[in-house]
Amino acid sequence: MAITEVRIADRFWEPAAPKRRKEWQTLIADLLSGDPPFPASRATTLVIDCDDEVVTFWLEGGSESDDEEGEHLVPRREIANLLEEYLRVIDQLGDDGLHPMRAEALDMAKRVVHDDGGRTLAHVLPALSPSHDTCRRVFSIVVSLAVDTTKRAWAHRHA
Image (cartoon, rainbow, N blue to C red; front, side, top):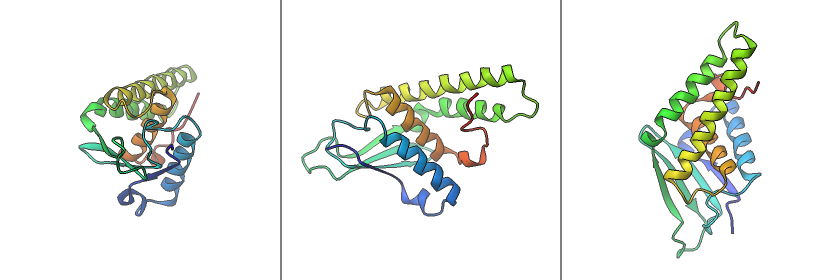
């Protein structure tokens, strides 16, 4: 079995604006288009939650004997600096009068931080995935839960 469904925790999903839900749906579709997260698990559903202290990944739908099913936690302190740096770069991309060369450099910095985010998630949660692309995609979802990126026009910009 593999993860075939990814959901955002109800406490985020239910009050979210349609634009934010659409963003999550896009990020989830991107995640499911590649190697599945938690490949060793028999779970079929992944629910992702995030608060000021921890990012929580719930695996559901596996067998009761599945050691990988249940709750997997990533302390926010493990990724806090990366989240802050990523958001700083995004905000700089939105500066008026940004020179094209500077925009290209910032876009490269954004990709580097995104890569670091994926590697950090893989390090602190080895069961997540051996695939760097999968870990990067999960980092994208974590960023979108930590802050409403629909309110940051440059969050999805690529030079």
